[in-house]
Image (spheres, rainbow, N blue to C red):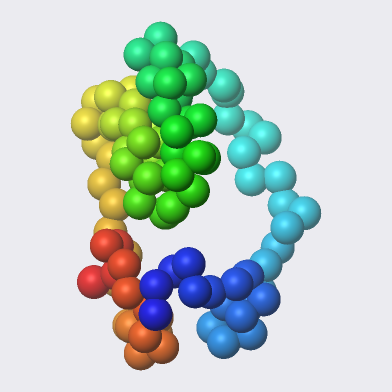
Length: 98
């Protein structure tokens, strides 16, 4: 089962998650300017990603460019891993599930 097969309601129920939606998590973080490159790339790629309307298109045309910008802004210190045995047991597949 891929991530796109799950709904928020199903994930909350099956994984017994509690969502705290009224927390102001990022109020103490200052906004930063993004590069002209990211702005231009998203302006060009976003309409195409939305037109194709697949998870793969959004990932390759939008998300990866944002992650690369974050990596650049943090001096190459970003990493992304997820160890989620409970998700694997429920049949969830994905690039970030190890």
